[in-house]
Length: 208
Image 1: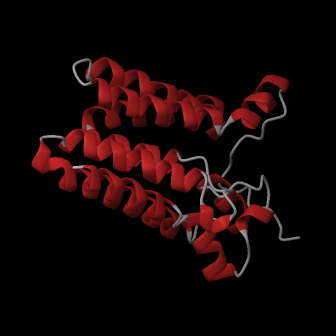
Image 2 (image 1 turned 45 degrees about the vertical axis):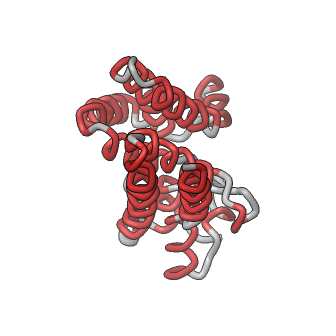
Image 3 (image 1 turned 180 degrees about the vertical axis):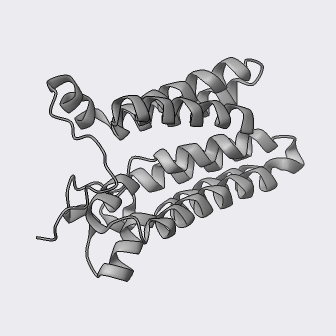
C-alpha cells in the first residue's frame, strides 16, 4: 500500500508540473506567460495577455492532468478500499505540482481550474454548486480573483460538511482549499485596497 501512496504522490506532482498556461504560451506565442501581466501562470493571466483563442488548450491540459492524477490515485488505492482517499491524494499532489512546479522554478498557477476539476471528479453535486457560486459572484463583481477565493472557501467547506464520516478526505480538500486561498494573497491585498483589476474578455493587453 505504501508504494501505491508514493506512486500517486510522485506522479500526481509531476503531472501538476504540466502547466497549461505555460506550455500553451510557449508553444503558440514562444513567450513566458509569467513575464506578462500579473506574472501568474494561470488561465486569467493567459487570456488577458494572449486572448481567448488558445485558452481551450490551457483548460484541456490543466483539466486532463488533474483527472489523470485523481483517477490514478483512486485506481491504485482501490484494492485497499481507499478509492476516495486515493483520488484526494492525487488531487493534493497535482495541486501542489501546479502551484509549485519544480520544472518551472516552483512558480506556477493558483490552481482554480485544477480545483474545479477535483470537485467534479470527487462529487459532481458539490461541483455544480461551486459553478453557480463562481459565476454569480463574477457577474455581480467582475472580479475573477474574488470569485475564485469565494469558490475555494466553498470548496473546502462543502466537502468537509458533506463527508463528515471521512476525515482523510476532509483534511485533503481542506488543505487544497487553504492553498488556493493562500495563492490569492496578493489579490486579497489589492481587493482590500481597491486596486484589483476587473476582468473583461476584451482586456487583452498589448505585447511589450
